[in-house]
Length: 115
Image 1 (tube, one colour):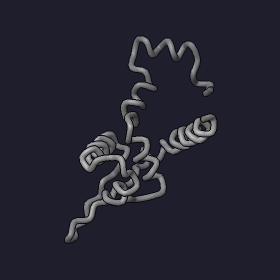
Image 2 (cartoon, rainbow, N blue to C red):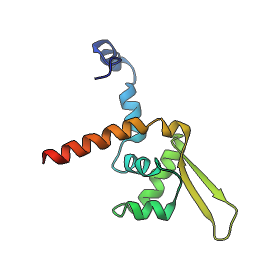
Image 3 (cartoon, helix red, strand yellow):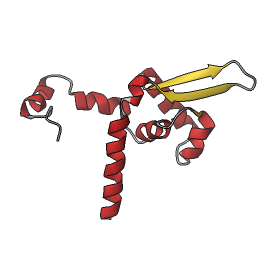
Image 4 (tube, rainbow, N blue to C red):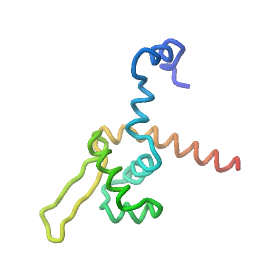
């Protein structure tokens, strides 16, 4: 476990907003982590993401991308073309989540192997 995590820092979370809670509010939920994972290797268009995540509805993908954009994790670029072209990519701040997503990926692999 990270040396920054100890009883003192855990106790401080009782009296103020816990950084873990803050992070999970931003990247938590069923789809945000998977969307971030899919964007780690570069820009994607909406339909490309939708094909990569066949179980997510169009509406839910839209909502999750908007929230990630609002929170500074994802950048949305609209090109002045007909038909309209929109691409999504991780911001520099969003890219800082890569080690976390990698750790979650590895945890998922280990967990699947236990089953």
